[in-house]
Image (cartoon, rainbow, N blue to C red; front, side, top):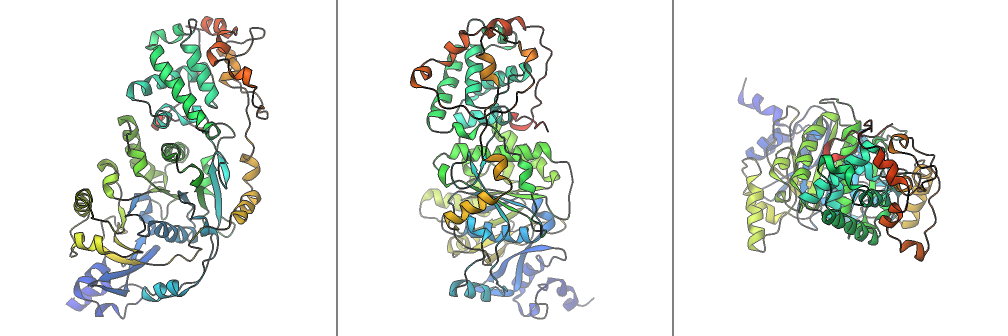
Length: 535
């Protein structure tokens, strides 16, 4: 075989006749992206200051469950990269989840608007650009904002995630786990915050202390911290995020009638000042998916690609249990057909154990104005494979909409590092009108299912029931029919603490009598201490 024949596989598939004209180094890079199967088109190779549209940079569809990282400084084009990838995934029948922090990703549902900038970018990278919108569902945490309400029950959310939201330390987190264990075994459903407060109050009362005596007990001081944290949390207006109907994460796997994947957009502008809350809720969505989805191994395309924006918020001040669970989830959920992309400013925001599992990388420009910036830049360069580029210089000189890319090939090997001028999204690069967004939400078949919150009998009602007709925990495991949320109580009634309400009931004696006789009906918990959904 001649030397010229050995070079032919390096030809970019879209323009084979032009590829031999590429510089030798560029041709070697392009050869790493000449995939034969379905792939997403990211853009064209940049080499020696020139855009080479005959060398297309792509990512195989089949490796998107191997996870990835989209990183870069503010204003470098990360959001548009998410939009570009989401569009192509949807077009190839793959559902996508996007966390919309700034509120500008709703435009994925509407056709883009042609202008000179878009036409110029398309011409540079040999993109046949045509405006197109994609099927989308819009969600909002607790219904705050434009979107179908997303809620979780306290029982489902679990002690590890709730501890992170409440800012508890390791000892307090362990105590909260003990409280959940007790509620699980006694059939006390923790639907919302008042349920959890009622159980904590009971377990620290004179009659309730004996309940946990044989398995460690709950100190009054720790219980006080937990109760104060819950009160402060609710005082910040966060109670609406917990309750029923609980969101079924299977909705994220929806397909449109035309075979395209649905883009699920979680609108977060209304809660962007509560980063611990929304970042932890994203983990709950991922953990719930992990519980429910069957093993599929390596498929031709993923079942879902999940973009985790502002990923650094996950890991700030996270407990060891939380970090271990994140690492395990990322490692195992690949076999469920779910790809997870973390979106943040620098790779150092992601723990090394997690970063090592992210096979696909799109690194936008970094700034190096301070000594800390310089240190982060050097650390980022070390995370890339060997490259003919001077990556320190390149990463500080990339323009908006340009990135350094390396992905996994169809055989699972890393591709050469490629500076890339990215394609332009074909959907609207900005938010859709608020009124139009509200119309889309109201017309969704999911709106009726999730819009109205309900408040049925759960732990609070059971623990505050009067002695007349009170049942022991063995008899209280059958959920009552959902009923409308109660109207807010008057000021005088609110002044009575949960402890007083609980102590005043006859439930204490009934619960105390059950010690040693309870037949466990404990909820099965897995990663993050989240509960497996009962369907």
